Length: 282
Image 1 (cartoon, rainbow, N blue to C red):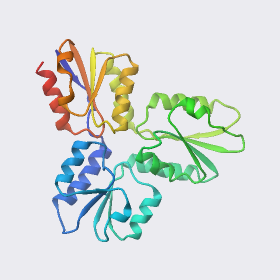
Image 2 (tube, rainbow, N blue to C red):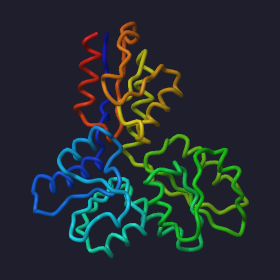
Image 3 (tube, one colour):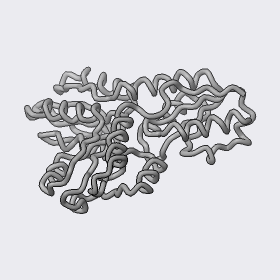
Image 4 (cartoon, rainbow, N blue to C red):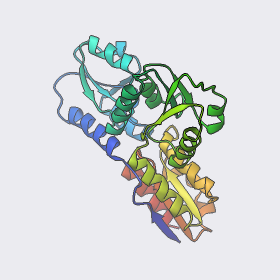
């Protein structure tokens, strides 16, 4: 059996930076408790490791005591939550991914002139909550072209189309082409999908064409990991999304000659290596 690992598998720049900031606080204690507001990244194994080191996860700014450290997760937070944190006089360390922060500011600037935000993304995702909080004149979140088609657009409004940074690039470009091709609405398209996400999805598609089976490693609650499995499946290549090596169906996989492996942007290298080791043992 040949096992091929995607070059882009594993931590992206934003995740690496976020964890580095949290590690600095953990490794250089100053007597103040360390909190994270929601999961710093979407990977349960990473979150458990930090919990074991004393990092406390909460979801309400009111639960962070005055004087404590609070790390803003890579997905970012809403403007309202950030304002609430600053009022509490806590020690904020902003670990928002630079790509997410850029998307927030682009949305704020481009919706200032009566523009309604049309956001392609997962309505319940924390990044999406943060992005739409920067829309100044209303927003509509949709997860498919069909859902957007049911949303009434009027000639007297200006629209701003953007995407969650980890969304599927090909689908977003198709949606953007359909909207900009209309004569009855004014639409500004923002480039908010992360370059690393684009490259990861392109490589996953290409690798899927060259192997008999694909394994995607990463948290089940990780949007970008789920989309990697989705783009592979759309190519028609059999695929299995796992969080850990223990979930691999090794007996079934033994019959394949070439297996490709990729991983989400929040998947630590140690989990990838364990998957590779178990596959190569076949």
